[in-house]
Length: 331
Image (cartoon, rainbow, N blue to C red; front, side, top):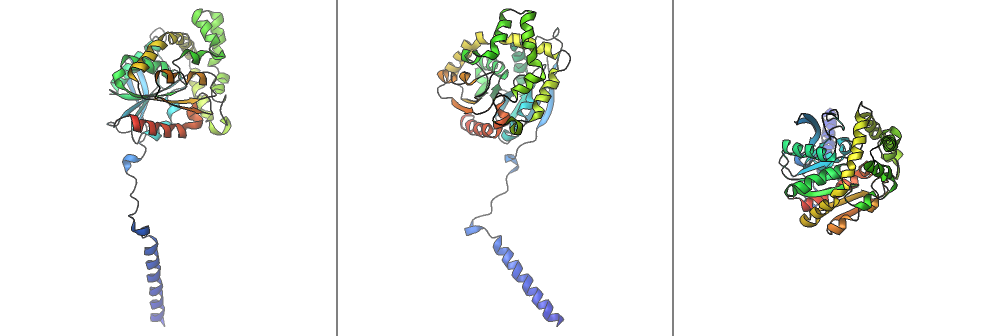
């Protein structure tokens, strides 16, 4: 009786094993899908500081050292934190580097009597930063303040630029013809305390929160509430709001450079992807299409979102970037 029971159990186990083997056979004789190579997985983000003329510049980096490089340049009042979710979406194919400008994020904030807070000087610092980290040729993602800094680099070193992704970053007069810039333009003409007083509310939390809520489809669900809090915490550091006011004054040096940047576009025809939050009240959609005058092959995509388009449409922008860079940047 016992032998018969064991015989039946053995038959049952054999049948189960046969069925399991059949279930795991490749369908129609196809080979099993190979495991995803480690090189295709997003590389871990690492955090560093490098000294540039006595100023420690913080940066985030991910991706293979020998891969094509992408330099991510942030806007106001944020930092490389704005790229926290974009970096892993690109780092399997590219070496991705995102610095914080002096006075922003985790980079040093030297006193104003020891460092000149201007777009010319920030661009000079970031130019030296690229040399320090070994970027001899790179694509750029420029946004807001990152655009006038990045375009200074491109105009000075056109041979280094492999492609440009611009997101709500201006290089044309049409992009500044809106109510947001009225008090700034008055300050450029007259650096008086009365004009400065009209700009100082832009450095307080209500204005920062507005940048992360105005024009978005569903900011409560799609925009991380941490972003405005983090940006404001950096601006609330002693001395930082004076730096921000000085940077607003320095922004007046950018429009006179627009013709030169446009000439760079026309002459060198860098591949350009334009991704724009069309509901932005700071750099509205009117500033996006003028790029096509000088770069007729540029690719323009408008998103139904606000100033920090990555917050709400980061997945779509990353997919567009991967396709665009895959076609335009040689590996």
